[in-house]
Length: 279
Image (tube, rainbow, N blue to C red; front, side, top):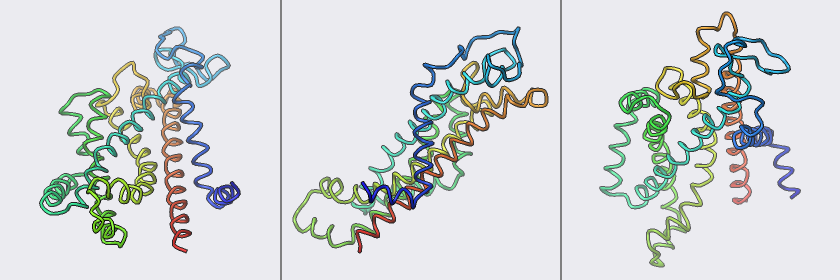
């Protein structure tokens, strides 16, 4: 326990990122149960109100409580980001493991396909896929998965190419361990820390992508209170009531910052652990 506390003290990014992530995760899971107002209730008599004791962040152009919509939207924006990354990892990591370990024609086919897709920027490709599939949250998740699994497959493959030349993998081959057993028992634990650290940062990138796609009309549709869609809704009222865009913008910024702090902290943590193991 003392070792863990010392590491946390020397790793403020991990400590702060973990605290903020815990708070955001709690809001995502339980926030909608404690919101003061119905996030979908329209009240034209209270439209564009300033912050008050009744409406903590004010109201939007339809009289809906902004605070309630932001808290409710956390489970959409953050939840969809987590879901997209988990599914992308579930596709990309196994492909990277088997492609890197087996090699040969299978590896060549996957790498040519991945290189071809990586020729296009992530966001542009996601826009194209979401535009073809149609504007809704399900199609955004599909578009992001199709874009992001490639990165995990490529990174994991590069790690496996290094690891499979080491002595412990050669011993596993000599002992006639199956391909599946070697990957599961030896290679997967080696690449897992890198994948975790990478995913922590990637969640922030995906949340930005989800919000951006909703902002341009390819994601959440009215009246769904997704943060990017809220930015789009408040765009026409920015000069009159800037809080319509400021609050969802701050929510996105804090979430992305949390992911970056957590990812950087995890990278430092895993580097320290690997270094101590070597010593």
